[in-house]
Image 1 (cartoon, chains in turn green, orange):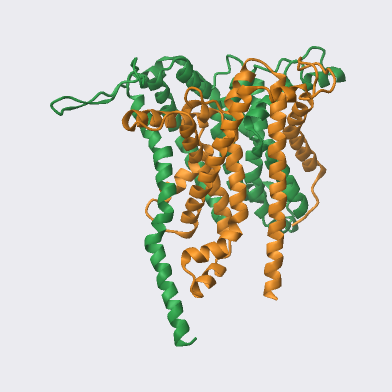
Image 2: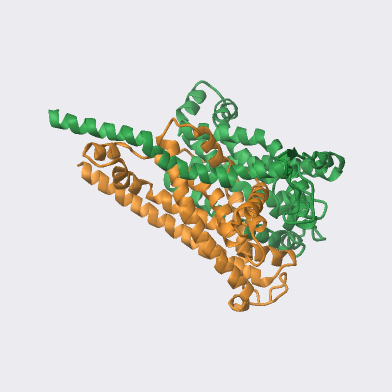
Length: 312
Length: 276
């Protein structure tokens, strides 16, 4: 390399260094500030208002910080909203109901999604692309409309009942709409693609020579699955499960459209507290308490999805 | 990496796909039902589609949703791409963990929580600053926040796999870092930008919960109108509307996917030719 070339490369390295030093904040700052202001800071406002009291003015809650004319700052923290969550049964019951519903729906999604993802991962490359497109397509089309479409299948005069009656398997139409079963079906139907995709991503990377090695050493297929495939696909299982479990706990559309009056999920309670009772401080307290529940699962998701991304 | 797929796995795969698609197909079939009773087949008809064109409430809501969708996806693609570049190209900076958390959390955060907290922010901002008034602006701001997260994930995985040597070569040949990025890496991540724009658009077009919270009087998006109609009972014109939306979105996604794959193949071919 001659002197001129060396000089050019030294200059470009210096410029690269310069960019890394100052220019990088021009890139980092816009998304960082936007998400801080419009995603993270709102939680601080919810926390603040969860300590306020309802009031009949706009906005409909009291200020927790008041400044008297002689500059004394008063902090009026009202723990009543949180105490209220423990005294009224409806909150504890709806939390428990939401957790249970989300847990069992996630299990069904996993049981159905794992074989699907496995079959896709083992198909030829061209079939794989088509199958993936078919799985992703419903995710792109409207969530709301798909929940509505499910109603056409499970209502009393819907396709499922007509088919079962025609086959002679039942003599009375099954009542599925407005029951717990409908909520389960809705969640499984809507969230299945979220389970399949992360599972596919880990299963696709699975080194098949490990399976061959296990077989060569005399391990039966089920044993190989338990000892090799399952542990190696754990990041996908966890990421997929969290991607179904967490949003399902807070689901509003599905219980509101498919569930009955006693399918009180926490999302519906929050909605009613807000739009029905217009009690914003209690709604904020419910949201904050809910968020505290979610911190663990979200951290778990974050950990495994980062791990999956880094191994890619 | 092909191996014989067992019939058991294949049958579960097809059951799963059937579960995903049958309700949509049935919905589309019933949108052509002449009878206004949703359960009775009264012959083929396109009445409900004709009625849609005269329903001002639906047309207005659709127009509002389209406008919001275009603004939101454009904003989210810019912010999300910047976030993806930050996370892939700068391994160490203050607040990296915070940014990672803020782009991952909206993907799993229940919408109802995001909606409530953002509404409380907007109310307090209006109280203190006199801006923003609830409606178009607040819905767009709220949507950009969660769409940015989806864009970041999509662009980030593409950027991670992009070959950096071209960009470095361009810089060694005297291009500035921004110029080098635009000339070499941007074409590589362009398909991801396009698909994340489309994804943001459909996510914004579909959002009910967050919009319901942050919207103000008089601003009803399409999902809000659909939800209130469906709550009142099954209406055949919603079937027609749903079919239109699903088909338009479906056709757009499939053709965008096809075009992107073709462009990608072309690019790889040219790269191979150039190497010879």
